[in-house]
Amino acid sequence: MKAHLLKTLALALVVSIAFTACDEDSDNPITTDPEVAAPTSLMAASDDGAVILSWTPSIDETADNFGSYDIVVLNLATNETGTPITAGKGVSSAVINGLTNGVRYQFTMRSVTTLGNQSTDFATIEWSPAVRQNQDNNGLPIKVYATTSTTFNSAVDLYNDNGDAEVIPQSGQTFTERGDLYVYAASSNATLSIISPAEANNQGLETQFSNASPVDVDDLDNQLATEPPAGSTYTQKDITLDNGGVSSGRIYWGRLVRGTDYYYFRMLIKKGTNGKLVQGTGNDRFIEMNVSFQNAVNNPFAK
Image 1 (cartoon, rainbow, N blue to C red):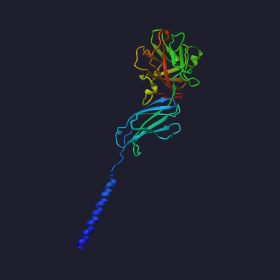
Image 2: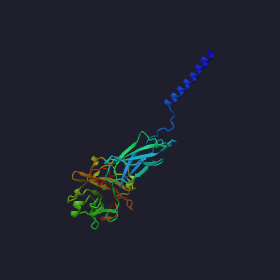
Image 3: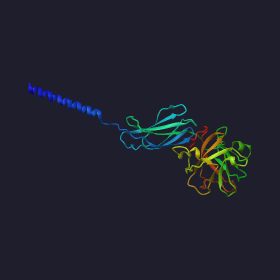
Image 4: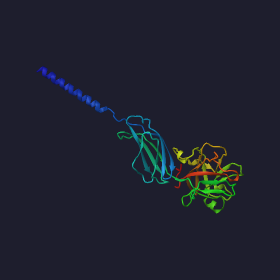
């Protein structure tokens, strides 16, 4: 009888130990799909009907269970999101197409494991697509000649009634009513300046330029940022262009002042075949530009 009781107690002890071990495992399960970190340093640039994104890859991309990136696009006007966009492992940029110029969007990125689990942390940025003006209304490069030119003296309307960039005379009623900027030179060998028409003798429209440091690149697609220049930086009435050689084109920022409203743009002054921002010779010097123009009022995302 005593021996039978000892066997029963021993069996109960074994069962108890087994249940205890099981409970301990349930409290501390073995992780088969550890969380992966999100990407960082999300930046953006405006394109026509699209936003260009770039980011620093997740520090966990080398993990065995790292899968991909999810990009969620939130339309801030309607508060609607579309189907998440997937960017593969090893990718650090994407072009988000099918967007509407002037609409603000929020882009949120998370990392995803191979089992589909998203990172808790994320990277996010707000941006808008904007009109790209790479040609004028005649399909030609946007060339603006200095005031010394008697043949080609010109200004530019960055966004005319048809939504095109249009090179116009730097004089007369057309300039007064539609000129957004012009190029001034005191003489055939003097420094060139891009100037607000409000500074001209006939007092045209006002354009303000940002005092943010220009960026040296050859393409508007290559200039991404975390945010546009602050509104308080638009203090300049002109931009002076040196006549020396440059390694690339150069981007500046401006905004059109229309009453109490602003229309923002960024402007790439292209490097010429002469290796300078200022092209041509003598009286007929000129600049050639591409422009990202935000046609939605008071929307600073034209970068």
